[in-house]
Length: 136
Ligand SMILES: [Zn+2]
Image (cartoon, rainbow, N blue to C red; front, side, top):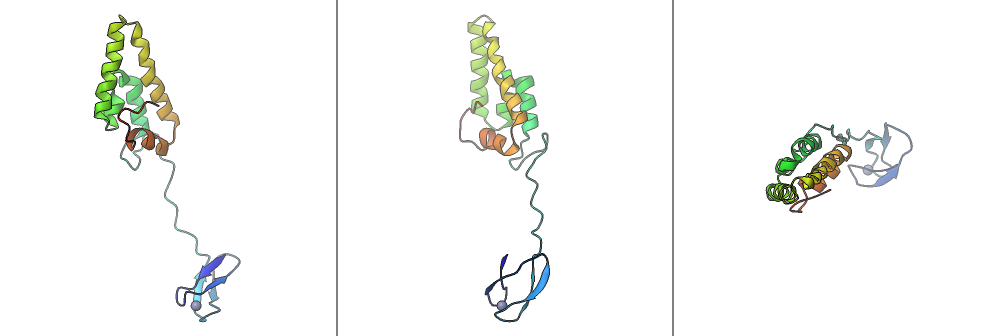
């Protein structure tokens, strides 16, 4: 590992773990091999809110249970998308005399996908996206 002396800025190479070594340039005693601070947890639990404040578990559940009302869009802050989605679902259902209710499989799939994707992907696809009405 190559380290930089905090005093003179000179670099030197040290093998091994945590130890005190003398800088070959200025003889300053430097502590090297100090373990990095714990990385922040990357995996966010299913029903835990991510950096955006939204949980993919909650969004997925809303999509599965109330997807026909665009609930998962409203939850993700996509108000316009939610209204559009709701109108499309109910218009298709109405125009086809109910047969088009099969379109309700769309939010069902969306919910299942939300459950299985990583929190990061969920936020990119559903919350932080500039898309008016993200689909999958
Ligand atoms: Zn030095």
